[in-house]
Amino acid sequence: MTRLFAFIVFFLSLQVNGQTVYYHYHNKKLKLRPRNYRAYVLPQLNSLDFQFKNLLQKLHPGYKYWFYALEEINSLKGQLIKWDNDCYRPKEQCFKQLSVFIKKARQIENSFQDVLNQSSFDAPYIDYSLRALPHFRRSYLVWGGLVHQLELIEIYYGGPLAKKHQTDQLIQDINSFIFDEQLAFPLLLPYKHQKAFELVFLGFINPVKKIIKGERSPSYLLNQLESLNREWNIFHMRTTKSVDR
Image (cartoon, rainbow, N blue to C red; front, side, top):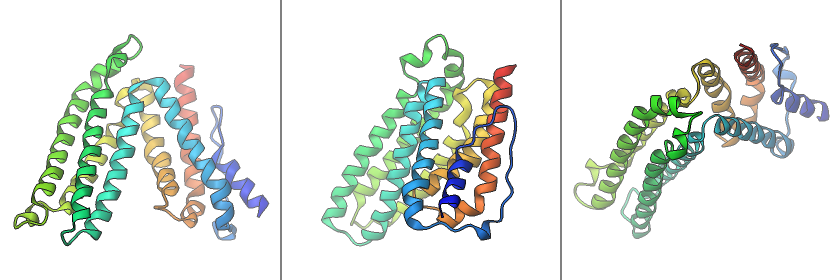
């Protein structure tokens, strides 16, 4: 077990200087106990996620607010899904929860304004901020529309028009919004780094975040180790080449 554990931690913490290293293995031979998974593997995944965010925030200060917005949107979506299941029939407690959701949604709305705050237009970032400005203006407006949908759910909750303002449609719209934001992820970066960060975000960071949140099982991690290793190493190879040029 100790050998397997060290193998996984090593696998997920590889940093390669201009070279891509692949390790072939048979995932059927690997076993991971839940206790070791929680105690060792998940902290390593959290560390990688943190390092990635920290790196991006150094490249552009707007990423601090962008990451906050996405984390809060995913959290709100999860709360809405639970609310939709628990509050099909009108309850006073459910009505009160809607007010909490709206307050949270307004805070998210403000964070899209903060992405391109005054510091984002300092000399090192101004070109990337100007390029991203139309997108984040649109994000602010679109999210404002989703907040309005949530307000309508609150207004009509328990009434005869409630069916016209259902939570499931809002959840679908939030999913579409998250997808659009993820596609726009590289906008705040220099052109030469955009492709590398986009690919590692979609091919490594997103799967890792799903594992951290419990949306993917430990067996998923074992099955995807080789793929995750490849994505992480290609990222380091590409960023090293970009810096050397």
